[in-house]
Length: 194
Figure (cartoon, rainbow, N blue to C red):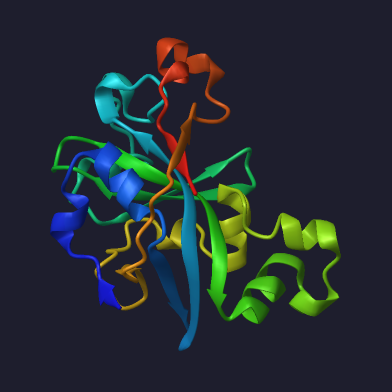
């Protein structure tokens, strides 16, 4: 599998969001590789998008990575307890990103299960298996990603995305989740999933 290049991320956020579906996200933690397939994303289109952290040109220490080079991880915390992984897109000083909302385990589900529930996958009940990594906070916990990974270059050998050559033919779209405050932007169909 080929690691995605910087050029992949430097394109329009909506295109990148759709094309991330089916790709493999790889995290190497202490020489123990975890691989997941991206199944759900949301696009955030920078200063004109009322749902985006950089709407109106907001530039804070938290959002600084979004203002930088495409192809870096933007990880923030919500509700004081859940981390969310985003992929920075487009050009420098055009702060856009794609939130990774859901993934499916591909390799090393055991490590993910211990990260998420502190027990083996085989010991999980059906509810835990169903909700294993189908949310941004859940997938970050399963991958053991937190703010220490914020700003990581997705072209590194520790955290990156690969093209596994899977053709995704049926992409669904809907409104983004939990952004009721965003006025008309709450109605944009910028959530994509398979």
